[in-house]
Image (spheres, rainbow, N blue to C red):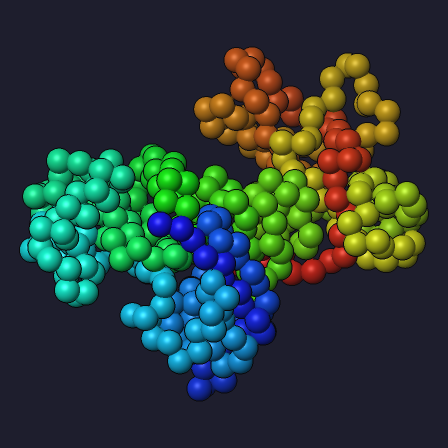
Amino acid sequence: MSGQDVELSGVSMTYPNGFTAVQPTDLTIRAGEFFSILGPSGCGKTTILRMISGFLDPSTGSIAIGGEPMVGIGPNRRPTALIFQSLALFPLMTVWENVAFGLEARGIAKADRRKRAEELLDLVALAGQEDKKPGELSGGQRQRVAVARALAVEPAVLLLDEPLSALDLKLRQHMRAELKEIQRKTEVTFIYITHDQGEALAMSDRVAVMNEGAIDQVASAENLYNHPETPFAATFVGEQNVFPGKVKHAENGHAQVETPHGLLLGLNKHGLGAGDDALVMVRPERIGIVNGSGIPNHANAIEARLTRRDLEGALINLYLSAGEQPIRVNLHNRGDASLGTAETMKLAFRHQDAVVMRPGPMARDKA
């Protein structure tokens, strides 16, 4: 097997009732990569998947797979396979019969179908399970059967629509690694739809963040988390502390922002100038508690009052307030029971860990 690239050029989808699910979109997914489309419910990500698969025709634009235009080509003739959230396994068929179902439709002889099914079941670590029924398998095993069935028709592009959402947390985490390993072995192009940022960051070569039918940002998982380009991407992927204010001074790629908590300095992501409205954003794990040693040079400092302290295994999550401003701090649990228990705290974070952006829609606004 091998993957092919997928190219969307000006693709949009507007339904007869006038609702536009996907704004005009240009997107190139590279051959053989694990690509995720991440966003909240209703943002248009599944609509994009259905247009790529051929179950929906775009209102405008064109789709090409492996350089071949897909206009007028139905789902059964495209080099794609789609795994639904429900998996849709046939309960009365054996595991191998489920895997070989697409091959039977193509007229492949039974012995050859069985052989190919066993090869794929071995690939997804289900050797020896071929004669069981789906109901005899665990949720994770059924998930792997669905992947094997999709791969049986040798697609160039495998489309996965939130396939792990029905699994419990530990099984989801296990299946992330399983899916990534299967993708690496087959080199098929995976396009994965999810609203779970953890899934997208853990598995993907690149991630597209969608909001209200438009793509906000496309980047590697690491760049998306560390270098978000919009307030929505910054607040949807991971947690952010957001401090609104006005730019007082800007130079050398940095901006100094006047906030109710004093001047805060950060990387000037959008090239803002003096007088511009701004948001200063910093992740909870980038904020530290200032002890007796004082505030480091060039650090941003805020005094806040502790409102809640949650122990979450490896992390201690602090919830604080500075006036009306909520602040969250994540600390590594190093076994010190007194860590983060003071009623009031001085907090500090480095200017290079903060980004300054132009105000815009944020993920918290969707709650």
